[in-house]
Image (cartoon, rainbow, N blue to C red; front, side, top):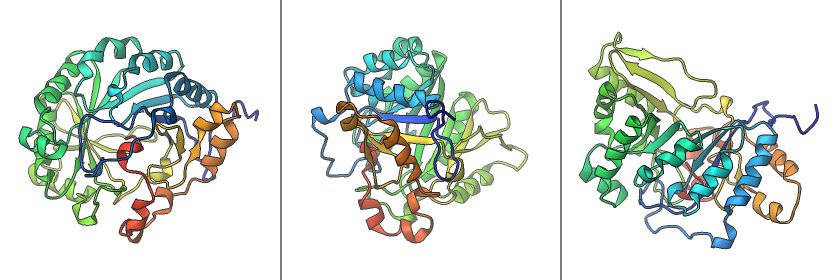
Length: 335
């Protein structure tokens, strides 16, 4: 097959058609599982991709079969040129989506619609305003909550991502599910994952099994309906009988889904990561600026991809701090 038409495939025959682009390392919240308590050293502005560079690299991926692009951060909406980036990417023949904390998303509804964005993922780890402040160190709960309702009213498909942490918010599992009774949202429970500086401990992770035990304590087996997962879906999807919305569990720690992975990540400073947990990166931005061919770099990056979680196959790897410290903090990777 001509390389111009060859899909982006790793050594385990997994095709990669989903590109996640981090637009910035900055955020207007300070969630500890994402940003280290002491903050992060931000890349100098000249080391970050500009709008045209983002578009050029995205074009290359589309050429090799990428059909979906998600914009992440940091918080992508803090970039002043976000409208330009969105407009450029909307000219590509891809499904565009966005992950945001929703603090300022109401300013961008028309831009998102004009770009063809239909699905928006919102990060929200609690339905309690005081706890929201404890987690994010900001008093934006009411704004975020109202913007979620506005997104629904505007016709967007809304997914809400909640990172569950023992002793922090695991007592809200049933509250999150109750929210789906009247609202057509997809609540996604994410297991707390280890990254540089987020003080991860295995006992703080609320597992898939623990989540389901909590659900089963409140609903009968007949009420809990297992849904069919979409191809390459990272989540196990459910709904409660009579609810408008759904809930799902992303069990990266206790029940990984790597055999179906179709994702590749581009950081805000132009580094290519073949896995969320990968400690090795390939510099696409410098290559682009030097007018080098990006294809060999991209394919080399994918061939180096491990079968499972960048080689962290068992609990002993997760319990080794060196495995986390050699990776980035979550905010500089992109969710």
